[in-house]
Length: 254
Image 1: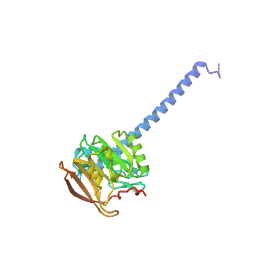
Image 2: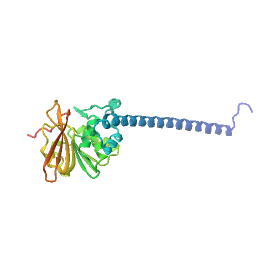
Image 3: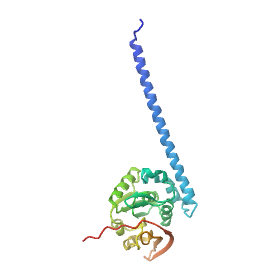
Image 4: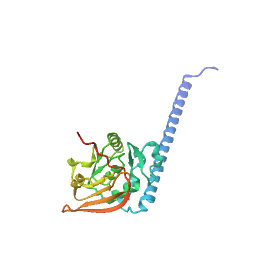
């Protein structure tokens, strides 16, 4: 009979439409997955190029440090609008008057302290968490202090989301170190005090290494490597001129 659609035909049409929708959804999901994978491959290639041209081509030779620099996604430690500049060899603003150090300096300071898998590290100046993430791939645990509470909260959330379970973040004045977890095998200071904080020297383990930029604000500072011998004697090596933001302090209590 013309103009009459059988029940069987209706069911077949519904099944066909359902399959078409499933195919379209699957196709969209595959396209999205392919795009995400392509983006991952692109930033991984940018990161590898950064390490090869900006770091390994200079004086950073430690294979473990180079591997960590290849692995940590720096573009996720900067604001989205700066992600396209993440693998350039320059510092970038992270807000609150603070910066993420240029990749070469991060690699150089990390190499200077000679991190080993059993080390416990202290970082003063968490910032966005990038240096802590690099150290976390090289030591057993990283304790990191950030004086700006908002940055500390953001870094803690970011590191947790990225799966860095061996990093503990605290908001506070890093000048006094973290005595509850001292002594440390490794200490890295990512902002410049006008002189090396005495508490950090006290919390450095015999045999430990401390990398710190020292100098007055808004001038060329000096990157120093301080090593504590078994006897407690301190040995200082002047490494290179650098420029860091000043190490902030909490105002003294009345």
